[in-house]
Length: 312
Image 1 (cartoon, helix red, strand yellow):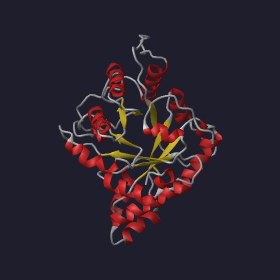
Image 2 (cartoon, rainbow, N blue to C red; image 1 turned 30 degrees about the horizontal axis):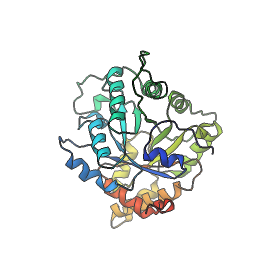
Image 3 (spheres, rainbow, N blue to C red; image 1 turned 30 degrees about the vertical axis):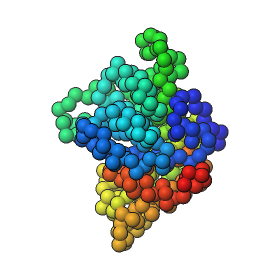
Image 4 (cartoon, rainbow, N blue to C red; image 1 turned 90 degrees about the vertical axis):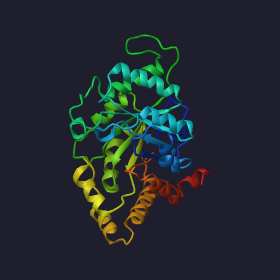
């Protein structure tokens, strides 16, 4: 695969992608706090291990400490953030201001998202905004960075140097299927993609084959979502409640038989990391899971993948 062009940030994630390394990103669960210490206590274990750590923007349509503030705290403490932006809660003016603010605070990467349904949150009477969609946000960020202008045409005094990301869900492609949605995000400015959980590597290979046939993998870095599943109960909940997620039954049975399911879930994550690192077209793994930061850090160490770069 030819490496997609990047012309954006100065972050570690971009540097690792440029170098052709198998990148490992993580996600930290948001907190209901007004101080920095608990944030660092939770995410600090990932420092020096994950190439970048995603900071969620109001996940599950619930209020937490602002993702922009949490990302700045991580950046100030040597943990590179990927700031998630949802279009659910802010209009285009606020989003443009936060793009500039993110760059000014040393945040090198963003992930542009629609946002969870506000009716499923704990304040369902809140008013969703959706002034623009996630593709328009990507295009806005790209224009601000590459052309130095706001959508109004007003020139910026300095440009936000941001690596632009999008989300996608791997599917088992049917005959004639085309990745139109993903192509539109790339056209809008996405340079890397982090996917929903994908534990079925057979499905992933078929999905990658369809992307390759369409020329997508020459245009974007694909980072596949996995994670340490703490129990068979958690796996079955994911299958029932997370759209597009299918934890294979043999994996669930391993968790059911294990005397220490959390340790088994971490071993499965390590195995997936090592397998993904050998699959052509996969640029890295994005590891997620509520309050699973330490398990993710342990899986990165146990995978020994950083040893290929001389970092562990």
